[in-house]
Amino acid sequence: MLGAAGRMGATVCAAVEGAADLELVARLDAGDEVTPQTLRGAQVAVDFTVPSATEANVHALIDAGVHAVVGTTGWTDESRGRVVEHLARVAADGGPSLGVLIAPNFGLSAVLAMTFAAKAARYFESAEVVELHHPDKVDAPSGTARHTAAAIAAARADAGLGPSPDATESGWEARGADVDGVRVHAVRLRGLVAHEEILFGNAGEQLVIRQDSFDRVSFMPGVLLAVREVSARPGLTVGLENVLDLA
Ligand SMILES: NC(=O)C1=CN([C@@H]2O[C@H](COP(=O)(O)OP(=O)(O)OC[C@H]3O[C@@H](n4cnc5c(N)ncnc54)[C@H](OP(=O)(O)O)[C@@H]3O)[C@@H](O)[C@H]2O)C=CC1
Ligand SMILES: O=C(O)C1=N[C@H](C(=O)O)C[C@H](O)C1
Image 1 (cartoon, rainbow, N blue to C red):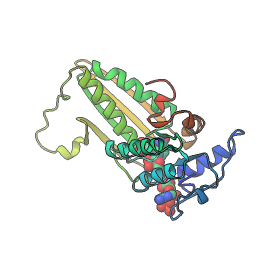
Image 2 (cartoon, rainbow, N blue to C red):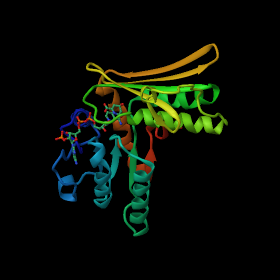
Image 3 (cartoon, rainbow, N blue to C red):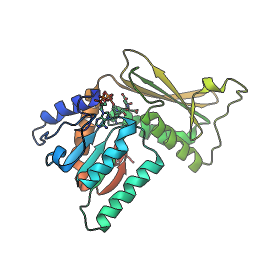
């Protein structure tokens, strides 16, 4: 477990220790090197660290011949592309066929909300995303909101829809972040864990899809499923929806 002392890391360690078919062999945190020695024979590593560290961790895991399950946010098309290239290079050099699974959200309610939103997107003129989190979160907007907005944008483009209507002439800073042309708003509030609302509008009607993770245990079935499945999926997989066959 990389990021073992963190909020997610500690919860994952407890979940792995509670699973009869899994064994927790190493707990690494900030300041620990990721090497075959520190990984202590691990077959799969789980990374819940920080956006600034996760890419280097994944490359170190590939070099160590260990499959990776990654929940940390901050990934871009470019950083994911470098992982694909690294995995291909290792395989071409006769190295192990490794799997890396990066998921912005392991919660079933969040994965389903994103899936439903992607399906709904083509039918609505307007779409916006609101993500709500605990105030100790370091990134904004959330990885889940970015993934959701990107899926909505792709569905709108497929359907030939243009931008959501918006006559705002000034005060753009109040309109949230622009993620692939979809406005994303971030709320930080003590007491919250992780929540998302996806709003769709047409003349005279609205659809709101909302999901709530009230406790980090909500992410554990998805994380454990990914740990069990990642070695059977060589290359890079992005999103738990692919493992759940929802994509
Ligand atoms: N995909 C999903 O389902 C979910 C994803 N997340 C994401 O997971 C990440 C972690 O979230 P959370 O657990 O709340 O954050 P925390 O800050 O609680 O935990 C991060 C941990 O990683 C440690 N760390 C920092 N740098 C390194 C490094 N180079 N190597 C190993 N460990 C390191 C930190 O140590 P220190 O504090 O000493 O710096 C800390 O213990 C975030 O990106 C968050 O958005 C969160 C929930 C669900
Ligand atoms: O930092 C968090 O807490 C969470 N991070 C992920 C994200 O940015 O989407 C997943 C979930 O929302 C919790």
